[in-house]
Image 1 (tube, rainbow, N blue to C red):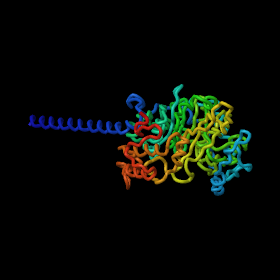
Image 2 (cartoon, rainbow, N blue to C red):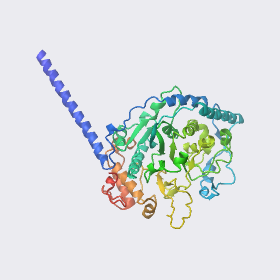
Image 3 (cartoon, one colour):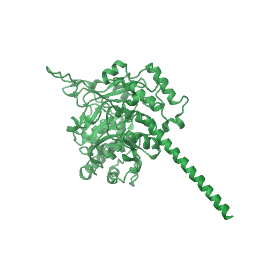
Image 4 (cartoon, one colour):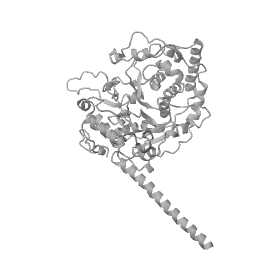
Length: 505
């Protein structure tokens, strides 16, 4: 009996060992297949094990100091109510009059935008007092931001349907020649995707950071979501100087150069204008202590890209965080339901209130394609080139605005699952070549097809990346319909004359 039991136990041990070996081989094969599938798309930085990991962040001394200040200055009145339809705000101010400059100032409407909010005088006074208290707290005991001195990098946020967009944007970032590290902030663990965060992003010199892991270290119950994640990603980034990019935004040129030239080296905060003039309620400047006309004399901001030094603009970011944490109050006060209401116009007022110098890019944005037609994008320009370009002197080079960012913010975005089209959306090939030195729409579509036809498992695409039509076949069909070429994985990248899968190697 003992011999039989021993024999049975030995047999079970051998079976378990064999099963373990098969599991290890399977995991190794899966890892190899994932790495192999991205090796042709992206440059090699370092082995993922030797660069960044996705370990939980250390407890934040900054947050433990900052959260009580936010709590102490919390508004203690109801949020403002809209007293009439805000359709007027969205229609009246969809214009580009501010593009014209007169005497160095933005040209705006003579008549201030009317107040559309309902607030009691006592509530306005209460908010004024709380705002003043918060500014006083910043001036007397502002916490020190956490960052590694001398570092610079790119910060973004993603998760869910934005992960496919982000991968395309990162591929375009690396195509520009940039090697800047990237921190990708996720709101909660539910947005963490192991394959993306642990296999793909490290090879793009990027890593995932879960914001809720940081915010859970304080008894103050703040729920950060939607627009608010942008400012908190900037606050908790490890970089001293950073470029925040929306997940659907990418540069045409290496953004490294932006950190080393004016206007950033002089002002340490660079913002890009949006299409619209201000729709702020006159109650807002009253609450924060600004001149009633100060917002009317400048454009609204498009915060898909923000260049900032945390060393020089710590208080600006902290005050912007205050506006975003209490967005139920400040978003309607700043925008009154105007286009893009949210975080985008919290940064400039924060700097203005604190009298901190910053720079607004002079060259206005332009539509890439036809606005309000699905798939169009926005082009933002090099901040170092003035607008309009001064007339060249004899023998000098011609001054021309340089397109720097493409923000594919209009739906459908760069997610291959939803990106269904049969015609070009970003203008014709000639225009693309003139603006970017390549047919950028075709290059981006090439990346979308390559990503769709890899075995990457985006949670947004469902189990096995299956749809009514598989994403790969669907993307290849769109590519054929749009550009008249069959996608065979050997598309030549415009002007570089190399295969698109090799443009980063």
